[in-house]
Image 1 (cartoon, rainbow, N blue to C red):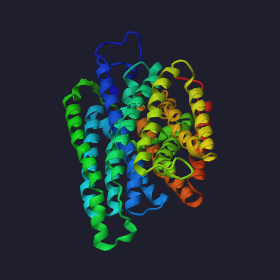
Image 2 (tube, one colour):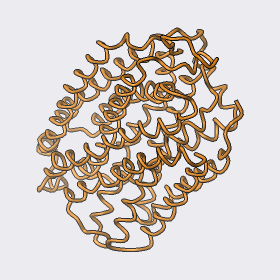
Image 3 (cartoon, rainbow, N blue to C red):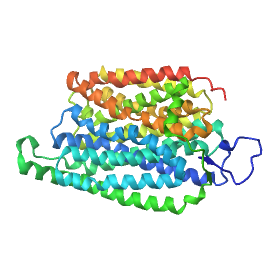
Image 4 (cartoon, rainbow, N blue to C red):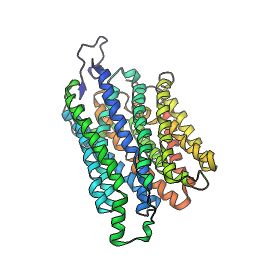
Length: 429
């Protein structure tokens, strides 16, 4: 799918690099999508301790929340790219938003059942919708402007993603973690336990019903404005041809790093509440620890605004390598200290996470041109790292404790550092 400009290009640029006359208004629409899917994704960080408490789960079992959620990226990304090629960016965004709505509404039967697995199904459907929206948003923001500033523009768009991840967990901590049960579920059984779980998860349901209403409104607005983006159909090809892109070393390395980055970011975010509750860290209550989660994501928001400027001045690969080195340092400090230093060094990881996803994405996809949607689909498949790395981290936490488990995301960042140095020079077009 290509975007057409309403005026002829003056510089002889290829059609795939023409900028629509209404690019500014379309960018605003994309920024809103980044805000929405970022915020909803970050709510997992406050749902995990809630479900862990209610269903008396181990860390590894609790991380199944992230596994169910991010597995959708692996399954849905390539079909989503095919939908984009068939019906266009705007209509595909509506499909994604309505799928997200369905996922939110599935929390109603999940709560009524009082069974952990039903929450995982609801989260999977919700994530499927987010995957579709993200397959739309990433290449679209890259195409809505000059290719030379795509790194900076995508980083700026990701700042709105971080704004969502900053706002949503704080509200979620009040609504969801503020009502953590005072009764120990381990003392109940049978019908009494099922009824207790259904009652305690009601606040989760109310939160997601509110989100469903908001998503329907946004979907209606997008549908109303669907004709603002003029698109021409791309040639029909098998979606399996997208995997040919993995023959390109730079793209394949970048896709692997998206897998590792998302996995590391989600793993750290998922353990923050329990980590800050540890007696040798900050010894906070669940609600107060939950209110610190926005500081992790807020750091990413601030870092993305700063990073958008830095990426205009320095090689994106070098900026990525420096950010990865800082995250490794902070994780080592947190794992080997106690108290305030341990807690705040972990939260500070968010600041240096800030530029990683958009920079890896744009470095990997340099030069894909009309195959941008296919590349975005494969990159989004790699987000399945959020399903696997946190699960590994959870098993490590059960075996050796939360502090030592930080070695798992640290290893992921080490590989990203290597990609930054590998891709420090622009790809020949």
